[in-house]
Image (tube, rainbow, N blue to C red; front, side, top):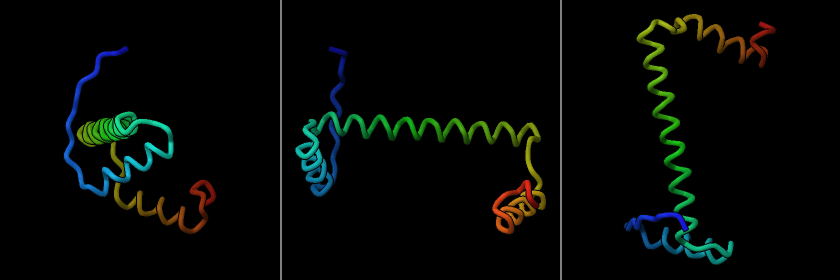
Length: 86
C-alpha cells in the first residue's frame, strides 16, 4: 500500500452528509471520494495557474492580439459561427 498522509478538514454538516450519502450509494469510502475530489481540484488549479503564467509570459514577450482585432474576430463568430467564413 502506498504511503498516505492524514488530512483533517472542517466542512458544513450538509457537505459531510452529502459525502456520506454518495459514498453509500457508490459503494466507495468517504475518504476515497474526498481524495478523488481533492486531486481533481488540485489538478485543475495547477493547470489554471500554469495557463495564467503562460499568458503573462506571452504578454511580456509582446505575443498579444490587439483589442480591435479581437473584437472583429468575436463579431465574425457571432455573425457566422465560423471565423473562416467572415
